[in-house]
Length: 107
Ligand code: SF4
Image (cartoon, rainbow, N blue to C red; front, side, top):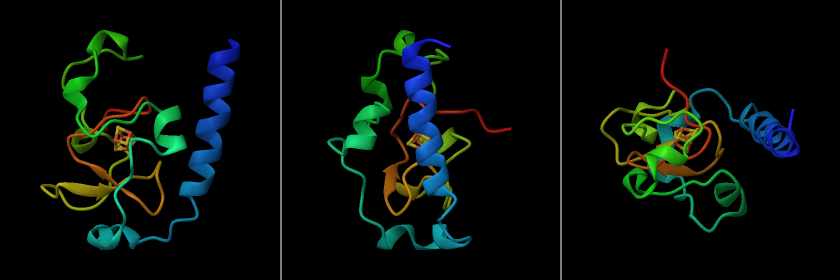
C-alpha cells in the first residue's frame, strides 16, 4: 500500500468510525444540520465540493461523469432533498449535487 493510500485509508477509517456514532434515524433531521463547508479540513482532505460538475472526472479514482452525492451509497435522508446527511460527515449535510473522493456506487 502506498503512503498516500495508507494515509487516505487511515483518514477514512477515522471518519467512518465517527460516522458509527451517528444514531439511527438521525438522517430524518437533515434540515436541522449545518451544511458542510468546502473549507472544512475533513472535506478538503476528501476533496469534497458542493458541485460535482466542477471535478475533472478523469481525476477520480473510479472515473465516471455521473458521480454525485445523490447517487452515492453513503448518502442518507430523502431523495430529492437539496442537502442531505452523509455517513462520512456526521452532523453535517452535503449538497445532493456534491461529490467527494469517497464516492461509492449504490448496490
Ligand atoms: Fe458523502 Fe458520497 Fe457525497 Fe462523499 S460523495 S460527500 S461520501 S454522499
